Image 1 (cartoon, rainbow, N blue to C red):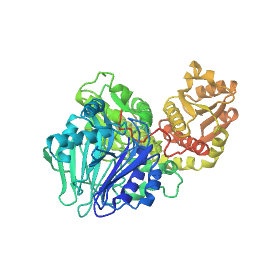
Image 2 (image 1 turned 90 degrees about the vertical axis):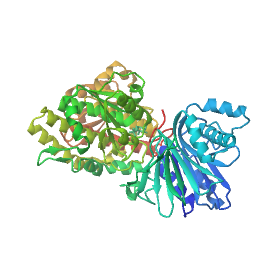
Image 3 (image 1 turned 180 degrees about the vertical axis):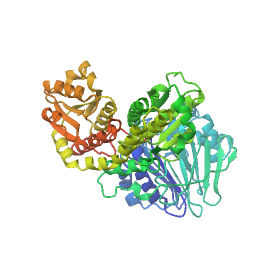
Image 4 (image 1 turned 135 degrees about the vertical axis):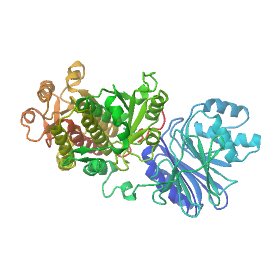
Length: 615
Ligand code: G6P
């Protein structure tokens, strides 16, 4: 949560930072702030509740000139999302300003100690405590602010990505991280950028250094970059070349990033399997995990950990791995797994699935598994993210930057990678016939075109959305691998339209949710042709008997459901294992249109953040 941007160099810092904050707004958008060291050496701080646009409006007339500054867009953890609690925070003496992403767990004890020493606090945040702690350390030990930051961080329990500017040293930024991401961009002529991800950086430089845990970077316009451990041991920065393209960060004519990302799926799914499968020659290869495939094939079980939409992708993965490769899979919420004292050991394989690769609970679950000797693998979208770096091996989803907070193309890409993995393992294990293998590969190659065909139904889906935009509740039902699709459909609707929605296995409906059904209740059913088709048709009858409204996702040409459902959305026929890749698309569009008609901000839904880097 929270986005950080910092700049030092020859350009004006303010426009660079504001633009960067807009790129990072998906990480939190309840308040934003900026601190610039102006040309007179004064620290100018502006903070505003709400989105970055509010901050921009506040600063517009001020004409601040300065080449060094820090900015922050917040997702509140400690303290209300108001102007005062917004970052940056400054020390009591006004000498330093800090932006912070993470949580300082022992901030209260430190704060009490500082209050006893006579310091005061304006905000309720843990970050201000850190700023004052640094001031206090400097006061008492006479070290520089940079050294005081290092010593202060040794007292801190929790997670942080921090950037500090100092009035007495206007030629440097000081950055540090532990458990929250921070990337340093190295520009020309002593220019440096610092950000929570690379999106604010890519426009200025492609040379980046991803800070590791407990590293402190001093970014000096004259002396260059120096990297230290929190124990003051100098390290050599590992400079990498960014592979990101600027166009991927723009809306490119779409009204919302979510709509753009929904429409990108034919491309993102294709990019995901490009070079990894060949139906004609009948092969699949996932280079990243090839050294671990033998272990996976022989594993008595594989554990998948994730949160949110990525957890739903894991549920689809469970069906694929079990059915195709006959490997036992357990899917866990990372947040539960990490605190449950799970039984894991050296024979276990834990796969983390994460779009951002930064989700705190998923990272912690992996760290726990690693500490018990398990092999840890990752499926991430963001290249160079924390999860991709701590895992033994993994596969990227290659969906490109996903900016809409509600995940769409990242989900279908995750499912695509899991499908490729399951197929590769099945082939190795001999649990799939050559004919079935080839058929599935051919079908997978055809998925992008079929997604395109579903996207053409946009107007039809919009018309259905119109009829249900004022619903208070919605139920989503599916069986087998369509059950996770139902969960994902319900999550999309509640995330962006704030309509209460539940996903249920269709047969479980009669154990509870059926009591909710009346003429006001839309029930979205995934009723595609497959082994449970007839049973799902019976579930639809049960809903109709209680006057519920049915929106059914059916296979092209279906006649039976058409007769009983209020609305049908046809999707092209495909192999039953690949249905989630198609059935998800109309549900994304349905949520999108409903949210839009309700006047919701589909890209930045209230209270949510794209990347949850705190517990
Ligand atoms: C947040 C996002 C979700 C996402 C989840 C897991 O809740 O709003 O869209 O599915 O985090 O994120 P990850 O980056 O680990 O996939």
